[in-house]
Length: 225
Image 1 (tube, one colour):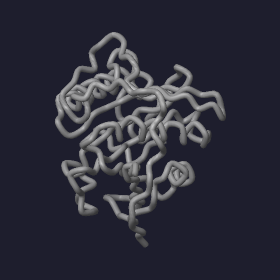
Image 2 (image 1 turned 120 degrees about the vertical axis):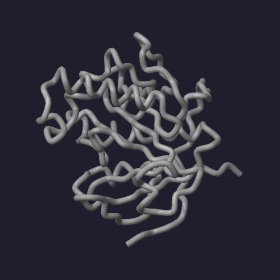
Image 3 (image 1 turned 180 degrees about the vertical axis):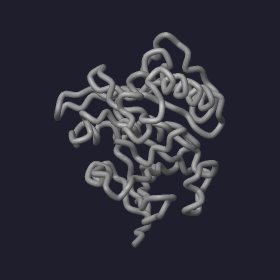
């Protein structure tokens, strides 16, 4: 399942900010230069930049930078058929390689990979909203960052795992001082509403993008008194 996944990559409303899930008690060691800044995905192995353990269901969720050498075949297998039917697998993976190399050089989007218990679970892109297409549909502010999620289809019905992914992403991205709000755009037939609301996202607006209807959800940084 994808949340408004565009390939090739291009980059009744309620209002008010909701608190993000509290930060994990373990210190996060984060490379402060990696968010929406040029990086390399060429490393043979990328190490986690954020890890969180959920005792309720005994899962460990980790976030790391994308790894071109290992992740692209996995991403290809997750893409809906409407994105993969026009090219053979090898050609499509080469196209993915070109796409993510462009993202690696970008100053407005960054790509990460999520694992659960060390198994591949999701790919996440974070976009600076003022430089993203989403800014055409609402008044984007400098502190707004949009998450775009591509899930392993075999895990898309596991709401506990999806909630863990959202909460770990909140821990990670809100650790950057420039991130004030996280946004997600999901298509009307997507079943992520429940997990988004449990994670503290609230419906901001109903929007119509080219060819589909979607919903814009927003979550604000937790304010510590």
